[in-house]
Image (cartoon, rainbow, N blue to C red; front, side, top):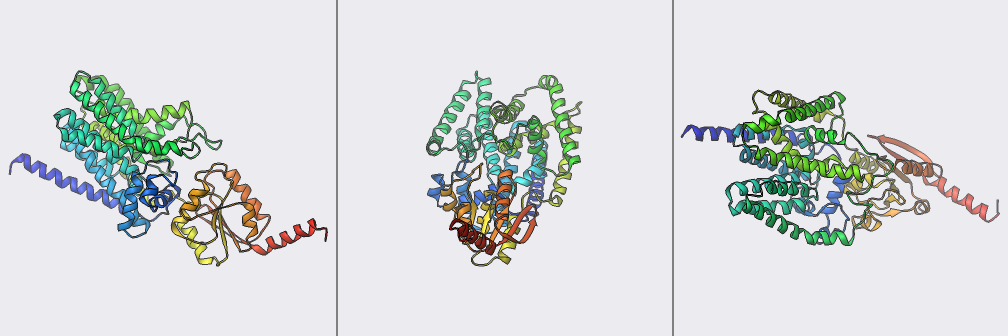
Length: 507
C-alpha cells in the first residue's frame, strides 16, 4: 500500500469518527422536548394522503417535498417524537458527508475538508435543526449537493455532474423556496466566467429546466395563495424591524440559539472579527493565486443572506433566521478554509470559533427548554379530564401540537385570532375544530382553557379574562410558561339563568 493510499485510508477513518461524534451529539435528548407549532404542522401535514399533500390542502407556506418524505417515514418508524426526528438526523449526517465532498472538490485538501465536516458535526445550530421535525437539514443537503454538481460539472464537463446539479436544485426548491438564492448565486458565478461559454450555456439550460419543473407547484400555490398565511406575510404590530438581524443571523447559522448572554457575546465577537480580517486580507488572498472557488462560496453566502434581508428592510415581513439555513454549510466551508491561511489572524480566530462551538454543543442539552412543553400540558389534562370536558386553546400555537398528541372530543381552538395561521377548513382536516365564544358557553361540561402567549398576546389575555368572568375557577396550573385553567360549568349555567330572568322580567 502506498503512502497516498494510507493517508486516504486514515482520512476516511477520521471522517467515520466525525460522523459517529455527530451522531452522538444529535441523539442526546432527541425526543426530550415536545413538538412545537411548526413541527406539529409538519407532522399533521405528513399524516395526510399524498394527494392532499400535493394539493397543499393544509395551506402550508412551504413546498411539499419534506412532507412527502415525512409521510413515508411515519410508515416505517414508531409514532414517537424521538423516532420521527431521526429523519432530520439522517439528513444532517448526509449533509456532513456532502459538505466534506464539496470542500474537498473546492480546495483539494483532505485535512480542510475533514475539519469542515468536524465543524458542522459540533455546531449547535446543526445539532438543533437535526432534532427539528422541519425541512431545513434536507434543504441544506440538496443545496450542497447541487453546488457540488455545478462545480464538478464546471471543472470536468461530465454530464453526470450537471445532472446532479439540476436534480439537486429541483429537490431543494421543492423543499424550500429560498434555495432560489443559491441557484441565483451559481448563475451569477457562471456569468462572471462568461468566456467559458459551454459552462454558461449548461448553467442556463439546467436552471431553465429546474424552473420549468417548478411550474406545477407554483400553479397550485397561486390558485389558493393567502398573504396572511405565507412565509412573506407582513409584520404585525407585535413585531418590528431588527437592525441587528444581519449579525444575529450569522451568529445563529453557526452557533445556534443560546440562553447564555456571555456565550452570545463571544459568538458575536468571533463573527465580527472573522469578517473584518477576511475583508482586510482579501487583496493578499487574491495575490496568492486563484480565488474562483472562494468567490463561489462567498457569492452563495452573500446572496443567500442579502436577498431575504434586503426585502426584509425594504418591505418588512416575518423573516426568521432559520429560513436562510441554506447558507450555513458554506459559512463552515469558509471557516475550514480559514484554518489554512498563513501569516494571518484567521487560523487563530477559527480556533477560537471552534472552542466556542464545542462549548455551545456541550451546554446545549443543559439549557432551559427552547420549546413550550405542550406534551406535558396534554399529559396533565389527560390525567384529570372528564368525558364531557371542553379543552379550549386560545392559540393554534398550542392547539396544533396538542392535536399531534391526542384525539379528544370537544377539543377546539377559539375563533377570532387577529393573526390567523390556518383556516377552519384546515383545522377540521387534521381532526380539530374552531369554536366561537358562544359555542363554548353553550356547552355545559367543564372548561379547560389553555393559554400559550406566543402571538396575539393582547387578544389571548382578553379571551382569558372573558372566560374567567363567566366561570368559577377550580384549578390553575403553569406548565413551562403555558397557563392551564379548569373552570366549573355550574357558574355558567347560573349566569345563563340570570340573563334569561332579566330578559323575561321575572326578577
